[in-house]
Image (cartoon, helix red, strand yellow):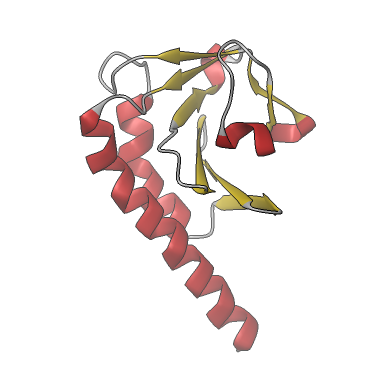
Length: 127
């Protein structure tokens, strides 16, 4: 998953179910990517409920939020600004919406939800 911190265009990115996230990350806006807005709006609650996975290594951390028909992938470290939305209906592609200013406004609650999910998991472990 380290490739996700600085992925080359048109490169296979390792991910879901020990397979690949997508062959190509297609740059687009949040409204032009089918399913992206819906995924970003639903993701904060999913992440807060523990519906995310984080992989890390030396100097990198990539987080994936899993919805019923979509996944959102973004690096926490280093903070590159990369944001991929993957929808099950388009398995060979991911929507790369990191160049869309509106996506950042939608992404902040997702990141907050991931942190809340980590806190909830820590509290459950401590109980």
